[in-house]
Image 1 (tube, rainbow, N blue to C red):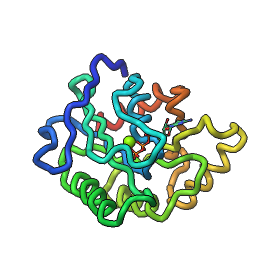
Image 2: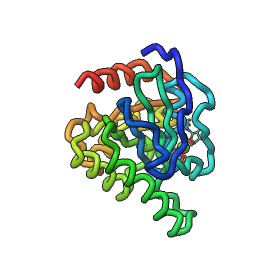
Image 3: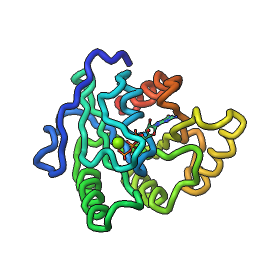
Image 4: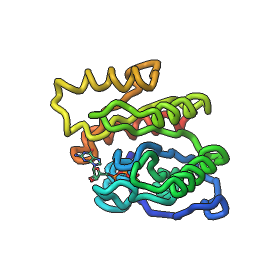
Length: 195
Ligand code: GTP
Ligand code: MG
């Protein structure tokens, strides 16, 4: 897809702050620091439209990016960041869950995991939730550039097993720094929008 326009349309915590539900939305969920905001930048061909950080816990709100006046990419706060107080974690979980459970124009929720690591129990919980909600269950395995090519297959197997992914083609290795997979990823999103 050619990106002719991409903008941060809205930053929200409460439902009343969401933009009107007039466009299909793709939401990206995953642990803090896995690369959700970087993924959005890569897909939109923008360096720093979505703010990223090497310190986990950067995105603490729901950020809606409107693309070509046709769809939105939705950056969610990360979960599972150990150094955050329990009350703060619960607050973020509330923000994420309220969005995922109530958003009528949410077309797909997509889980991101770091290709180098075995998914956590929280990742598994999120993936189960995604499947039970009827989404297609695509998983983006980020930071592919950090692995040797020979290690990729083994990691995909590990991720597939832990999450219980039915078809391993549903796990898509991705590098936001190399951006080689961006075009194919857009084809997948465009296909999803046809249904
Ligand atoms: P939170 O907002 O805290 O939930 O994190 P996030 O999932 O949005 O992660 P973010 O995009 O901020 O990236 C975290 C760190 O990982 C940053 O230092 C990024 O530069 C780095 N990173 C993200 N994607 C990639 C990638 O594909 N390859 C490499 N090498 N680094 C990446
Ligand atoms: Mg982020």
